[in-house]
Amino acid sequence: MSDSQSPSSSDCGSVSPGDQNIGRSTRSSNGSQIIASMPSRHWRDVFWLAIFIIHLIGLGFVLGVLGLNRFKISDRLNIDKYANAPLSSHGGLTEDYWPLFAVAGGVGALLGLTWLLLLGSKANQMMKVSVHILTTYLAVIGVLCFWGERFFCGVAFAVGAALQFLYVISVIDRLPFTMLVLQKAVKMVWTLPEVMRVAYAFMLVMLLWMAIWSFGVAGVVASGMDDQKRWWLLVVLSVSLFWTGAVLCNTVHVIVSGMVFLVLIHGGRQSSTMPQNSLMNSLRYAVTTSFGSICYGSLFTAAIRTLRWEIRGFRSKIGNNECLLCCVDFLFNLVETLVRFFNKYAYVQIAVYGKGFNHSARDAWELFQSTGVEALVAYDCSGAVLLMGSVLGGLISGTCAGVWAWTKASDSVVMVGPTSMLMGMVLVGVAMVVVESAVTSIYICYAEDPLLIHRWDAEFFNQMSEMLHRRLQHRSSRASEVLNRNRLDSHMQGTLTV
Image (cartoon, rainbow, N blue to C red; front, side, top):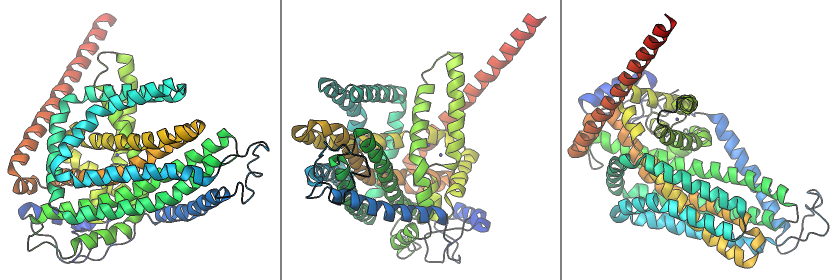
């Protein structure tokens, strides 16, 4: 996957730079103890906070104008003349397409709520279904696109199905351990009903923003401008929605990971040493002093993580093709460098220590590498499995809206479908991030002090330790093989030179 200040005694276990080593040694000796006297946090990455707020205000205005221009009356605000729309083009009305996006939002929210409600009883089954059914779903949609003479969309979904199939095949041996980690994360989250309520609240906030966003997008789809200009507008608006959705998801990530970290540190939420109002403190920090760091990290983290997963899966299946392996290794090393500064584990450091994003990401990665836990993190595919669930939810939402659009105006399906899919992905992602936050916190705690995990679940601790030992042995043997191969090559070259 790829600055600090400390809070007062009632805060969520934050540690300043000078106190971090003391804090870790204190936790190592007694996991229920956290340094009591800590100054308040400072605001981090304020520039990106300002950019995000300006982006929301400006985009909200633009969305309102785009939607109103076609609401009830065609070209109400005379925008089409600035877009050089053809005089013969009348387009449609905003209310013709707005209900289609309402369906996508409703389906996405329903799937997200269902996920949260079934989290305690059916979570593992739902994740397994997501992994195995996504390839088939992509392939079926691709066939339907070819049947509907949408060649480009058909090719896109067929390629997506092929990549998904190859990725699952490449990591099939990792899935048992991944499901174990996800099962324990679900167990942790299920004991914290308050973080579930946070997810519900943020899903509602996301729905409210989507109502405004889809109003403007419906106006764009209904506009009389040519397809190229509409597509460019939709791409810009989709990137904005992706960023906004990522910010809300990562805000939940910071809140939940802060709570999970505290529960592990103090040995349970009922512990007498557990800080008062810990959830409200986590929420307050997430939406104030740490919000700029969340906005900054949300721009890049998801894309880099996805690229890293794909390269890792492809790299493991290359074989002995030296030329291709060299190219992939170059990309792999480049992405690994980026992961050092943009990784999801930074959000745990943000939640606990209140650092800036890059500082948090770098510290988290160095912690993993210094303890060897990075080998375990690289082997785990929990983030990819949860992403598959979000993508499947998005596809279902996009299909529902796309089928209705096909019955009303078939030429709008290509625009309505992808945007509806993005809406569904974001809404389901808000629900999925609750479990992902627990996973990241478990790994951070294991790296800082493995005894915290042992105290929480001794059997799980033994399973993690055994897997870590195996992964480190595997890496050591691979390094020895590469070293021996290089020595043999050097010897052969020396022999030929002589």
